[in-house]
Image 1 (cartoon, helix red, strand yellow):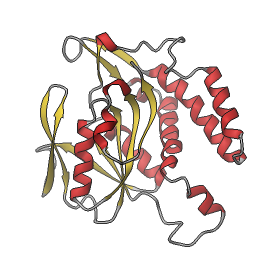
Image 2 (image 1 turned 90 degrees about the vertical axis):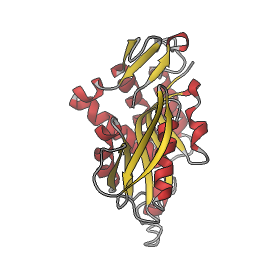
Image 3 (image 1 turned 135 degrees about the horizontal axis):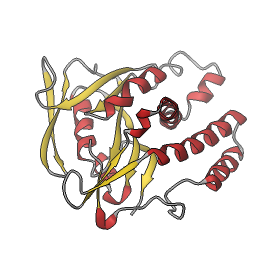
Length: 243
């Protein structure tokens, strides 16, 4: 999806921007994580905080694209460098575990087979940038991957949901056999802006009888309040662009 930010409200991610993680943020995160947490959890929290700095540094902005008055946030440089690409997948993997807080405890306690069952069965990626990292994340999580595409792009029987884009109405589709009833589904995309496309994807998951675990995004443009369209489903983002 695109990542539009009105120029009048654009956040400049400089060293003085409170929304951008700094070296002190990393230290604070590590100190906070270590309080009362197992060493492994503290290390994971510190690792996640440090990856955010590298990912922020890779973002680019283009003014007046695709239309005048819009600032487009470009994530493609992340994928130009294999180390940064790997950093992204690792960060998403760590962040995704927030959807399953009992996962580590269950494993450590050798819980029952039911408790140890995969917490996500299918990762759903949104057209088109969700396809860049969705399959890789699915592999890391031991899940399958299913694409949500624009209307008319998928073969075979599909279900459809409509949504309002920044520039007009559009439609999403998913193949009818992509999700089985009762399967646990995580929806991923690069950016949540107004939330319309993500909400449509959630509607598709529910139409197929899937259980929506939550939404995971690389970046949230928080002043557009897109998460308000996603109902009660948990929403987790790696980075934030604040007003």
